[in-house]
Length: 178
Image (cartoon, rainbow, N blue to C red; front, side):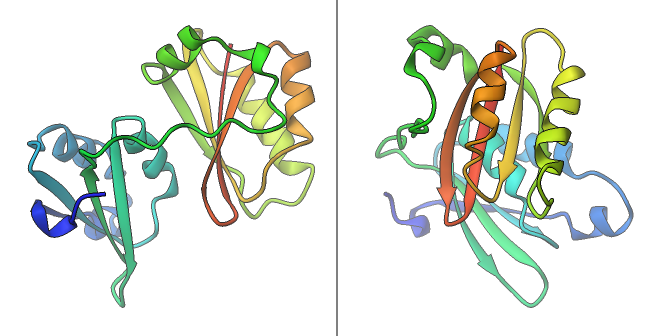
């Protein structure tokens, strides 16, 4: 991994947006899309933006997060030494997806949900309720605090493909698509 000090930092503070009830996602994405190869986004946020981690990871970004008195400082940067591979869950049947699926998955639009903190069976119910409303060609990106082993057979039975990536201690990103 490169030294973060090698990057020019582009600062963006979205705490005021959040305080005013505005969704800062579009501002963040505009800043990210405008970054040059030698630049990194230095984002200040009032909470840790777990769903944003997966969105930007799919665009080739790594991040460093620091908790501050004011909230969180997250630096998003492109690691030029190479992307980390996707970790496929042990429970995922490799017949569930092809190399073409993996290539196309990065280009899928999607819906993100966070089911951390929900008591079973609420995560499962929320996931399937959301899947009912997913449009053709979209994927569902789920942030979960544990590997959802009870979800996998239900997804298979319903005709979905999925990948699970462990992105931190007690943090999993599950990508679901048809």
